[in-house]
Length: 76
Image 1 (tube, rainbow, N blue to C red):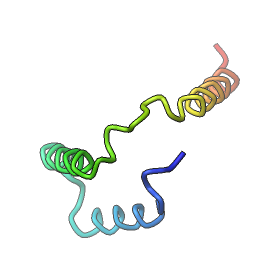
Image 2 (image 1 turned 120 degrees about the vertical axis):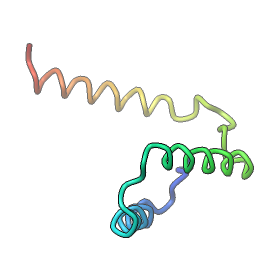
Image 3 (image 1 turned 90 degrees about the horizontal axis):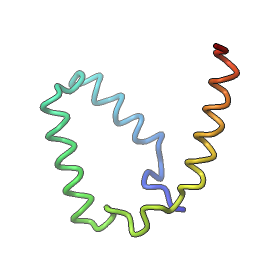
Image 4 (image 1 turned 45 degrees about the vertical axis):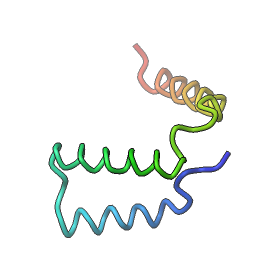
């Protein structure tokens, strides 16, 4: 399964630089940016995924593990 973000450390650095230089985005600015990015992904043909169920098994295993950890960490 290919990851959409091949170099997350570069993205993190970009985010940190942006926040340091520009500050946090307002809600309206964040929605506008999200809309532009969504449309760009559509135009590039990378979204929606060809198989939306690809990788679901991994997501389910992670969710089960996290849920088990929460139950053990916070007994009721």
